Amino acid sequence: MVPHLITALTGPINELEARILDSMPAIERWFRLEWMEHTPPFYTSVDLRNAGFKLAPVDTNLFPGGFNNLTPEMLPLAVQAAMAAIEKICPEAKNLLLIPERHTRNTFYLTSLQRLIQVFTQAGLNVRLGSLDPALKAPAQLALPDGSELAVEPLVRTRGRLGLKDFDPCTILLNNDLSDGIPKVLEDLHQQYLLPPLHAGWAVRRKSRHFQSYEEVAKKFAKLLGMDPWLINPMYGQCGNVDFRAAGGLECVQGHVETLLAKIRRKYKEYGIGEKPFVVVKPDRSADGMGIVTVRDPKELEALADRLRDVPAGEVIIQEGVPTYERINDAVAEPVVYMIDRYVVGGFYRVHAERGIDENLNAPGSSYVPLAFAESHHLPRPGAKPGASAPNRFYMYGVIGRLAMLAAAYELEATDPEAEIYE
Image (cartoon, rainbow, N blue to C red; front, side, top):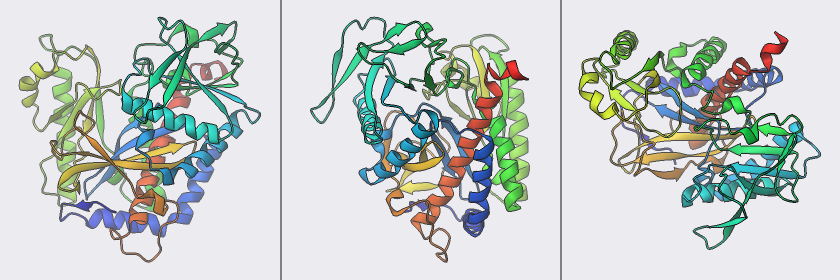
């Protein structure tokens, strides 16, 4: 199933799809060489937007939830990728400690954890859950929708190692994005592998830094294919400490909105796109989908200021808006691609019946439709017309998803606090 594009502007995307399919051997070799130089994040999910004239990532998550939305057909791929990831890090690994978000009562999130445990158990590991909640003093059972339970246990720190009672893991896998800061219990764990590293969490990470790395990757990839990097790259700007409640707090944001809209207009004119450009203003850190607004004119910011008053003061990213013209049953949809190590393992469409083509879909009321990745996203169908084959379209999504994952690898190298020692 390829959701239909509600736009006449499918030419460039079909052209991009054809170019990617024709260049598949060169693309796969290029990725292989990049992975010889850079270490992929342990796992990644990437939100894409398909405008018909442009396909670009708009968010890259290094602590993905949502594994419950992958279909059973995708599991063998995930297990194989998990095996490859673990073999690289700790081939003799026997025990894996999985640390979830603190607020683990959300049944969708618990089902995602259940799926992750299933994947790593089938990859040959004993998996147990350890909670960062200091109030948890004894093992607790969390009820799942299917009637089963997940046991979550208090962490035990002994000198340079972290584990549980009678459980000493080789590897610790974080499924907690550290939005609230880095807990002391996770610091100085030099005897174990902590994945992703602490500087991948929102205590340190910034979206603008990621898209700076993505721009670098997109330019390299576009040069390989002989194309304009703008077709796969959302332009952006960044403001330092913005306080939406303060007088004059919007000045930096308004300036960037104006500059970015002018740049997008020039690109739209170049490609004959009759749309009205927009930008998305959002916090430069955090993955909770809060404080995100769509702006088509700098003057609109004054009116939106009331909506942003509850957003804490901090850094802000102003990102080129990429509309989504994909539809499932007339509801707006966007593809989300999931990866473990350097492999695409599946994905789904995030669908929202009450949101527009220019709005954030990661919001209450969204639903999820599995991508047809079961048909294979690694093996496109040569000769099929662009836009007509699900495997071809999903191969293209997988390529753009992997570019965002590669950008995350660049980003983590650039922000690694221990790397400075060797410079």
